[in-house]
Image (cartoon, rainbow, N blue to C red; front, side):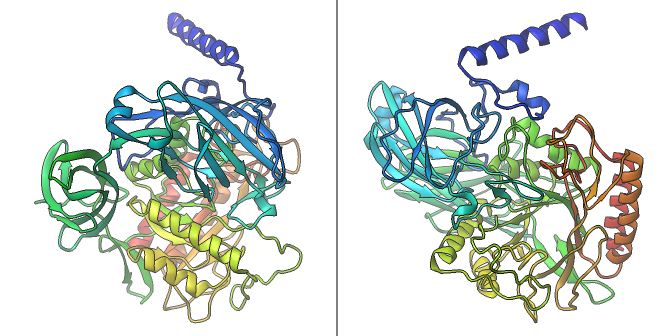
Length: 610
C-alpha cells in the first residue's frame, strides 16, 4: 500500500513538473475537481472525439498553443506574445492556464504547429476538424485562409490538403465572441455572471484534430432510422466520390446483417433476433462501412455504432398521453444537467470526469437527463447511449439584446420575441446544425427549441422546422415557456419551484413538469464563491435535503400515476452560485442520500407504468 501511494505521488510530481516546464498551470484560485490534477499539455482530452465514425488515421492537436488578444476592428496582425493557452479549454477557464475575459471588441488569436505524416501527404486527403469553437472564427494554414465558421456548439471541418507542406505547418484560429452583447446562441453564458447566469466561454472548447481520408472516395456521414415493429435498422450513408457503400451490422464482431447501397440510399438491415435498446438494457450494435470509388475499388473503411429503439405516444387508462419506448409507456425522469465545470467551464477536465456525472445520475435512480441550453461533445452522447440514459436536448437560447425592453413571458398567451432577420437566420441555422449532427445518437428522445420564453419566437414555425429535420422524436415546443393555444409539438411543459405542479394542462398533449425542485444545500469548502449562494429552498444537512427531496418525489408520484408523463429535477450539480445540485460543483460531495433518492425515483417511474 505504501509503495502504491509513493508511485502515485511520484507520478503526480512528474506530471506537475512536466506541465510547469511547458509553461502551463491552472489559472485562478477557485475550486477545482479532482481530475484537474490529471490534466497536462501532454494529455488534454486525448480520446478519439467522434465515436460514431471512427478511422485509425488521425492526429490530436490538443495541447499548448500560442495566443494573443487584439482589437477586433482595425487591429494589427496577431503577434502571439500573450503566452500559452491549453487547448481545448476555453479562454476564461482555469484549465486554459489563462482565465481572461473576451469582449465583443476583442479578437482571440491562436497559433500552433503540426507535422503531417509523409504517407498522408502522398496518398491521402487531410481533413482539419474542430469539435466546437465559440463563436465565430477564421482558420488559416501556413498563412492562407482555409475557411470560416460561426456557431459555438457544432463540429466543422476543412480539407486542408492544398495548404499543407512537408515539415512544420502553422495553424491559426482567429475568434470573435460577443457572448450576451451579440445576437448568437449562448445558453447561460454572460460577461457579468450572477445568479443563474454563468461565466462566459470563448474560443476553442472541444478537440482539434487531423484525419487522413482517401482522395478518391470516403464516408462523410450517415443517418439512422429504427423500425422496431419490423426489426429493421435503416442506415443511409453519405459519401464523397463513391459509387457504393457496403454497410454491415455486427455484434461482438460477428456480422448479423449486410447491405450495399448507393450513397444517399437507405440500407435496410434486419438482424435475426433484434435486440432493443432501453435504459435497463442499453444494447448497442456495431457498424462497419466499406466505401468503393467510381471504379469499384475499396477506398475507405470506417466504424460506428447504433441501436434499435423507437419513441412513440400511447394513451393510458385515464386517456392521458404517455411517452412510450419500444411501444411501452415509460415515465422519463431525470435531472437538469447543465454541464458546467469549475475548472473547465464548458469542458470537463477529462473524459472520466464527464462520465462520472452520468454514472451518478444512474445511481440516483434516474433514467433520463435534460441537457439544459448547452450541447456536449459527441463522447457525452456516446456515454449516454452506453449507460442507458435518455436525453432531452435543448437548443442553447439566444442572447437577449432587448433585456429591460421586452418581457412577455406568460404560460398561456405570451408574445413573440421581436426577432429580426439576423436573429432568426442565426437561430434556424445553428438549431439545424445541432439536430443534423446529433440525431444519430439514439439516447436523444426530445428536442427542446426554447426554454422559458428566452428569445422564443415563431414557435409553430420552429417546431415545424424541427420536425422537418427529425420526425422520429418528440418536440417540446417551449420548456416552461409560452404555450401556444391549441398546442404545437408533442409536449406541454410546466416549470415550478420547488413543488412539482402544473401551470397548464391539455388533454391533447403529453403533459410534463420540465423543471422543479432546486433544493439548496451549501457545503463549506466546496463553494464557487463566499456569498450570494442560493437555491429555491435551502437546508443545512444531507438528511434534511433528502427528506425534502423524497417528499417532493412522493408528490410527483401521485401526479405520475394520473396525468404527468415526465419530470425534470433541478439539478445534477451545483453551478457557480447555485447550490441546488445533487452533487457539489467540484464533484467531491454527494449531497443527498443516494439509496433513499434512488428508491423514491424508482417508485415514481414504477407508479407511472401501472
